[in-house]
Amino acid sequence: MTLMTLPTRLRRWGALGALALGLGLTGCNSVLDVDDPDIITDASSASGAVALRNGVLLRFAQATSGGESLFLMGGLLSDEWKSGDTFEQRNSTDQRSVLETNSFLGGQLRAVNRVRVEGRSAIDALRQFAPTPEANIGLMFAVGAFTTNLAGEHYCNGIPFSSLDENRNVIFGSPVTIDETFTLAIQLADSALQFTAGTGGAAVTGLASVVKGRALLNQGNFAAAAAAVAGVSTDFEYEVTHSLNVNSNQNWSLNTNARRYVVGNLDGGNGLDFVTAGDPRLPAGPSGGANAFDSQTPFRAQFKWDRTDPVVVASGIEARLIEAEAALQTGDVTTWLSKLNEARATMAGLDPLTDPGSTTAREDLLFRERAFWMFGTGHRLGDLRRLIRQYNRASETVFPTGAFPKGGNYGGDVNLPISQDETNNPNFSQCLDRAA
Image (tube, rainbow, N blue to C red):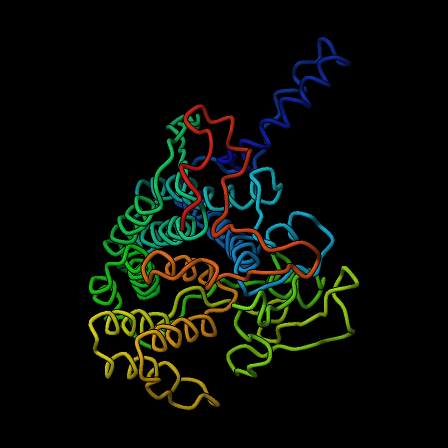
């Protein structure tokens, strides 16, 4: 079961250490009764509650651009990234042949669940010991909504969401569908919007509104999605920040620095031209040598982020893209094009778009705009799945297909399975299905 929180893991290792000490130090039981004051599992003061809140924000960074998260793994399964690595876990994901035994999956599911579960503990503590500013409570709901929606976009049908009781014992969750997952994200976002008073309230409102719109879009509720983001200003941004002493921006670490990820470019026939397009939203190209870490894959770096650069995970640009898609669904081409160009007007070097003239071409242009605006931020896999689920595209016209550069052919996966780590959950066996 992949819910293990940091304190739980430490307690488990502590138990093993206690056993070893007990074998060699019979009669010295006081050695085993040492408290560790720097591990916070519960709060008994305002400062403790705020510390829990800060810990959740660290977990949120780890679940997004501060770790090898679904941002990267989802981009690898889609067309954003290619594996320039020797690790089978990355190569098989790039090849669209992901097994539940892939050892990277467990950490990513844990990262998502930690935000949700530890966020719940922080909410309870903040309500009791530090109820103002209310926006702190709202932020915990909002980041929980974000990661819950992220899970729905990346995993198969049948995601188990476990929780903890008041004594921090695990309550095993049963599998839920991706549609139910999106509903849960919407509910969390609505809760966030009830707690926006005080410092940070504008950021909570923007983040929760965009996440709600994104989840409604995933459900095909386009009009409600547009309504959810209508009040978000185009210049709004919610960033995940990075620093040398906490965590590096992993888009830089695993691509530009370690050369294990390579920016995708026309991959598998259907992939977008992320490099050769020369788009100012994604500066990218060859860098520092011909090949990636595996010594065979041509290396292409992104130049959008350096090691400590923040990553925008929700924005007013995304709000305008949601509104554009809702307009396109009703046949309002004028509003659709206006919203796309409103977003493009915020960046130098982007000329206004013109109507390509057909429904299919408009859809292609919309999703291309989404891909370049939100590259590397966990959106692309969900969008490719929506092209199948909502726009009736065949999977092999959407995902990379054909001959795989490292041998064999691309597989047929359109999502990630649940890690085998979850098999200790008695309510879970495996995905309900692997459909989009």
